[in-house]
Image 1 (cartoon, rainbow, N blue to C red):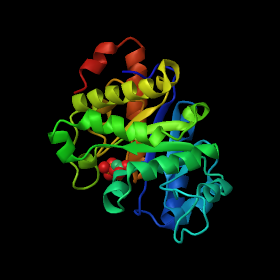
Image 2: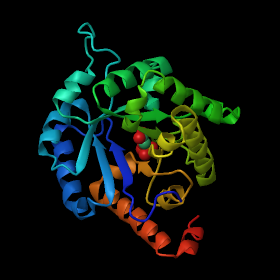
Image 3: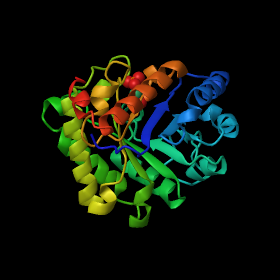
Length: 275
Ligand code: PGA
């Protein structure tokens, strides 16, 4: 466990292309009604597709943060089909996910591209949800920690020290995401999150590296959320499919909060019973 009793827990959901504009609006409204009493206890980020961003951002009542799924690596005009950090800032989008494994895999995004994106965003004062994660092959070759370390180092190489506070890390092993996903063993998640923390401390120094939130994502659901959350250096959860139903997302959030409260109320052995 890492999150303290009164510390906000991070939750985010990237809705990919699963929801159109109307569905995104309805989802936001339902999620807000269900979770608004938790606003002092959670940092909740909803990441709809570009086509819904403007509308959803206007409708959001403030405590749910609206993020974007991607950004162009450049601010130059000649990038047909892309959306720049400046354009997202104009919509008052405060946080942007970069480096999601689907973008790395299907659109050939490299660590260098991701570094450029991180630069564009942080220069504009926007937060970065940095997606990192190894492939199955890399895991099987025992390279996970090395890959993770390289991804973080490269992504942050152009980010100014004073902007480190804008970084949030989302660790999602490529092999554990989506319908083809295997489910990660909680101990493995804990091991990799600790390696991520070490990389962050190496780059940013003890003080800053220790406070960057690290979220876990990849087939998180009602059954496995607690056993993942209780791992060291897990500050929150990034949930896809299981969060796209607002009632289910609300249920998972409340389960995690209840678990955290019980843990800090002195029932630490409660945590030991969660496998
Ligand atoms: P999943 O998606 O929870 O459906 O595996 C996670 C993600 O891609 O963020």
